[in-house]
Amino acid sequence: MSGRFAITGARIFDGDAWHDDAALVVSGTDVEAIVPARKVEAGIERVSADGDMLAPGFVDLQANGGGGLLINDKPDIETIRTICTAHAPFGTTALLVTLITDTPEQTKATIAAGIEAARREVPGFLGLHLEGPHLSIGRKGAHDPALIRPMDDADQEMIIAARRELPALLTTVAPETVEPERIKALAEAGVIVSLGHSDATYRVASAAADAGATMATHLFNAMSQIGNREPGLAGAAIDIGTLNAGLIADGIHVDPATIRIALRAKRGPAKLFLVTDAMAAIGTDMTSFTLNGRTIHRKDGSLRLADGTLAGADLDMISAVRFMHRMIGLKLGEALRMATLYPAQAMGVTARHGRLGKGTAADIVQLSGDLAVRSVWLGGERVYGA
Image (cartoon, rainbow, N blue to C red; front, top):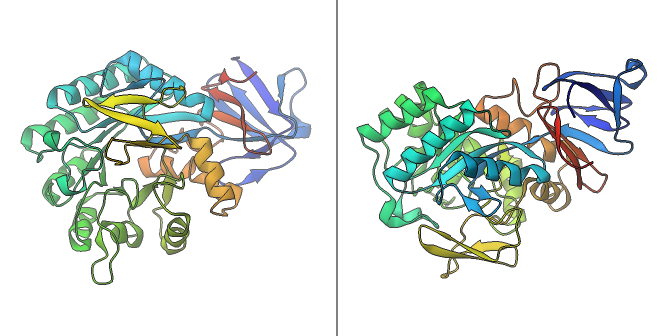
């Protein structure tokens, strides 16, 4: 579907507030307006969503793979297209394709593929997330320790050059291994710097935030924890008002009680937002796959290396929203904000993403009352549902 049409009969969540007895008008690739139902023009094509809900398409800032592929394995535009397509049925319409720590050659190839994907306007591609290789070996998680290394001048310039040609670029670094001066240079170039896979103290994390880091990667996982005398990176991510933080809400990576504590404690303009940390398995029935030559097993709702180490998540975004609403007890609007508005704010892309309003992208998810995805529109085109 393309052109101009109105979706009618649904309760509409615009990323901030709910609209009842309203219709969402789409013109081409953009949202034209949310209007009272009685004011929908005669003659305009209508799409009925009676009894359902409409929300902005979900924004995922950490998607390692999907549709059977990881960007690590085949860094090209078709892999990016496959990953974006695999996430769409779960409501995600904008994502950062995420490269897990790899060789310099794979990193360069991924950046080149991302630039080409942006040039060709691959649907759903928001940009890249380089998760490593400048991390702490002590908090490596599933990252290959043989590939973790300090950031040098060439790495810094490569990342800055990539940002000039990508619509959005996020990089995860361990602040104890990347100097504040480098973080400052990256941030001033428009790179979003996230702190993660780190054993940093609160003081070191705070210095990184002062230098321009604005995010923490998968809160509580692969980072120094809150202690009575040392708050660690986890404490810094919650306490420092300028640090947004991603959260894997699957009931496996973070205990529900810990999530509730973090939600109560986090104050200020920066927010907690949902990420999937999804791997190749999303959208498939595969039971295992490989990362950097190591087998990852899919079982009981988790992905693990042979030694039991969690390796990404077997999670999609609508499942994360349902978890936050049903298991954590958030009001539905706030659970939806964590998948839409908050990640878009963290990346500075709310002009087009994370909201529904005049001039935003017509990226829309239609949800049933029990939070099943009925339909998804991406740039005004229905890509899932009927």
